[in-house]
Image 1 (cartoon, rainbow, N blue to C red):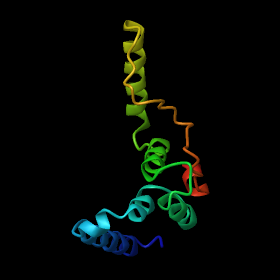
Image 2: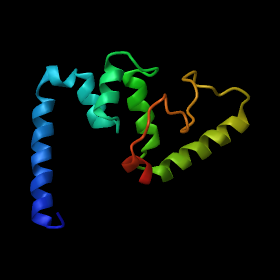
Image 3: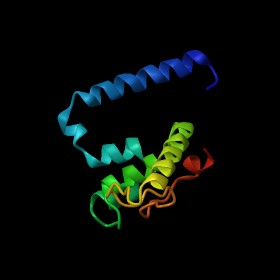
Length: 117
């Protein structure tokens, strides 16, 4: 698995697969595909979410995992600092979008792999 050629071959295969998916409107509208690509939910949890058997929606699950797995934490910290500065300048700066606390998980359980990063 440490062979650079093997890794590059796998990366190219994945890229081709994703490009094919982008061409299929039916697949793009599939909630299961979005959960698979954008969360770390187990197949059972994905199915429960899609069938409405969880306390969180598909969108909630995706947004929750996105907020827990930010790629650019430095930019996020700068954004928070800017928001804190703006809050001190005005009494009300609510966006009306609800809480943005990263500890809110919408009932989603992160897999051990996502907790390690």
